[in-house]
Length: 624
Ligand SMILES: Nc1ncnc2c1ncn2[C@@H]1O[C@H](COP(=O)(O)OP(=O)(O)O)[C@@H](O)[C@H]1O
Ligand SMILES: C=C(OP(=O)(O)O)C(=O)O
Ligand SMILES: [Ca+2]
Ligand SMILES: [Mn+2]
Image (cartoon, rainbow, N blue to C red; front, side, top):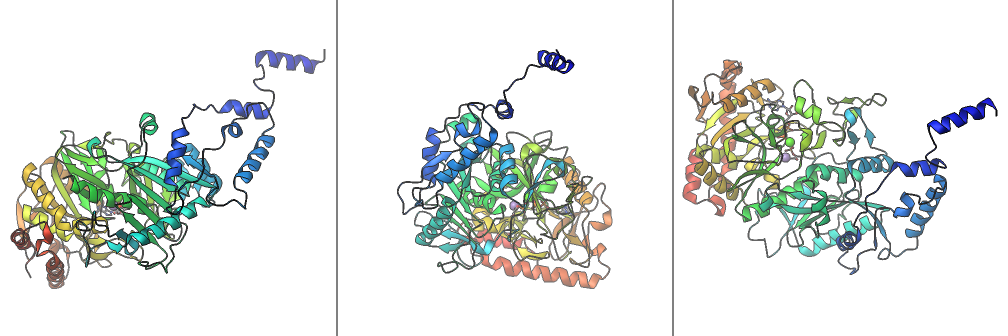
């Protein structure tokens, strides 16, 4: 026997071949649990029904199994050829859309979503740290002017409409027109992705959300941002409480009534549906769910808040209120305080709970040494939206803003080392209202009375930072009621009256922290150093700030601490930081006038606070 056959025999004896050919070897690689798809196909088809077609499309859940795992050892090429033929047959050009089957990928795993995104989306890449980097297209921030809420008898009287409100009305027929447009668009695609998840960690206030989207990245985004069901919960998920149809790559018809552009983000509380057309910015889905929760939770007596939240070792909970970009995610990520959530919470009679299952951090200027928790959360499963990276090393350049200032990282909350799961906590001991002052005249920290707390909550003074909303290219002073007016569904005084009652009942301390500018306005002064802001937050948590000495800041009548550990005392009183004291006082008075002017719209109490209470709150504001 030749030497070679000797060697082959020896090798075979030592390592007997496990497969007759490559195709069979590949088929050994993947196992698949028997998945119960029958009821899901019916439920998914119902989700994809359109209002002018009774029967939803025939839904094939995942690829036909026999194509996925060749039963008999055949060449892989033959299996793929057959798959292509079958897919072609399923989508033959002449098919009437109502009969056309839809391949729905339902609740894919993270690796599968990675594979689909990389396979079907040219703009998606794996980058350093293992995250999935992708582009959201023309829109890289929210489009608040294109938000529409359907005026419906069941909710019309509750909703905040009119001047100052973020809720632009739409009638039901127009909602259905846009819904039909989005669903028909989705039905023309070869592949759809559906993710089922929950909003609300409080099991007594938990809502089933279904997201139907065209892009794997959108499915992965909502996998990260919603609460992920267990296998059992998925098995029994049933029909969702609320459905989001994301047809964002397809424009709205600008000639449709109520449209102001080719983008439209529409919410119908009666249909329990949200429709997205003309924008692929993933944050619209997350904020659509938040708007829904901002309606249903207060209706249940639960206060919903645009806020970050963490908990100390003694169970002391802190809420960080703030408009986009003011520091909720940055400051709630604290290695000494388990994270409950970074953006959206409910406060019930039982305590606080996170509405979401993940975090959506601003990534611009991200540095490992400044924000280690967020930096380390960027790993496999995290989405990096609109970041720039080196083509070869795939190292992300977090300082690059050539696509947008509003680069984002979306990750499941478990990516934060000391996340508290389940994301619930007791009643807050401290509330920190984050204002990003673009005028540079407010102090880095002030302790608020209860009336002042209501005044600053209703006023929501801060700066819209560049990028979070379309068209905002640099920080601009703004008044955003409840530090998140874009997402409110009730009048701001509804949330303020609930907050007042809870702060009173639980003896919560309320602080105002300026994470914006000092020493001059934006462009002249400088932003408070993050390490100083963190030191202030630490002093609040240690109790040192509660026992500090205070001095009164004129015009705004704010109580400002005289000293804070690890913070230079000269930065505590803004007048010390301005070279031109006269200009400081002029600017401070100008801001006071803006506050007084803005508050006029709330003087009648908005239907949820008595005019007398509104007057008492008004007294807590600045004097002009
Ligand atoms: N003094 C400061 N306090 C908080 N954040 C700051 C400060 N200075 C700069 N920043 C930056 O501001 C941004 C705040 O973003 P983020 O925490 O995501 O805001 P939000 O969660 O409220 O939208 C981060 O990029 C952070 O690095
Ligand atoms: C995406 C958003 O969250 P954040 O408050 O972190 O900006 C937003 O508010 O638009
Ligand atoms: Ca945030
Ligand atoms: Mn937010």
